[in-house]
Image (tube, rainbow, N blue to C red; front, side, top):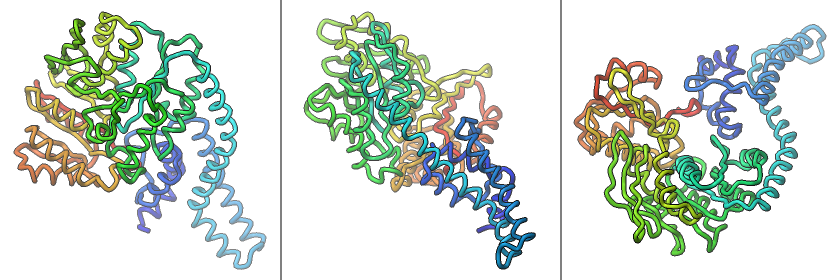
Length: 476
């Protein structure tokens, strides 16, 4: 143990740091423990976000702080009452190992809270399952390593032109999150849309039994969450649990993703920038003003324009158009719905500042397929392109190859300036850049916030800055 680690565990912020990181790790103790054991300085871990004072967080903070006077009190008793042999040694150990007692009490409290929550969560999930079993709405479930939220928002926008629709917000893609959403339903919805979160094998299957989908969409399979799944085969098998549940029913599969296309069955509907089902795409164009294309099916023609950026959005839009048609929406309603689609928060979200610099905020895009699509989009734009990234997390054993490939893609696209945030994976991006003979400028920063603050001094009118992914505090 280094001196910095020893001292920072006795810093007053240590308790807050523990609770913050438990929250950032979604109270996954194994994930939290890996962070705790590799952290050298606990005095300043809240860099990207701040602790949210939820009831659970407040309870854990309270236990942590109550442990401090309790241990001090016990050490005092050990000295003054001689209740232990070697009482001074016992008192010294209690004081010196105070951080260990704090950590132990917080984790035990978390385990007890889970025991208390379990019956409540069981009731909520059972009620949700019963509600959805009797609900007459068409239920659409979306599974995949990436692109679930974008697909959900596209469907919401397009289908809302002719249907009463509801879908969970944010990241309510777990059994409890979905159960809470279901409790808000009025019962007269025509369509319900669900994201199915996948963290471990069997997760998608469990969610299907709650949701009972009638239409499935698989957005793709890649290295996102590979740290937990260990292999792409296990990842694919988990995501395709949706197709297993919907055996014989309608399942849309992203045909532009190699793995999902390889796993697709004959009955599945592949969607891509060439179309979906009998819809064909022609005249595609994309730029900072959005994406345009023509959808045709027989004599039906839809002049489509979306404010979404990048040709990679055409496939999901075409799939949404086909689903809308199946559900009875008229072509003009489909066209109107597509025209209302726009960039989602932190997902290739454009903003042009007064200085004439365009920033593309893609900080919630943390997967290899998304990165590739964004670099392809950047390559089509005129002006000086600046790419800022800390890399991707949870790439598991593939992290070196994934990041070297990002470097190669940036070099091939001719991106003029690459800004890397120093951590465990960005040296691989540098290696990929060098191996591909990168001719642009490479700039390093130790922290993301420092890079963002420096951008106004590094940019001029006409520049395009891409902020690719965020780096959570629990990773190095």
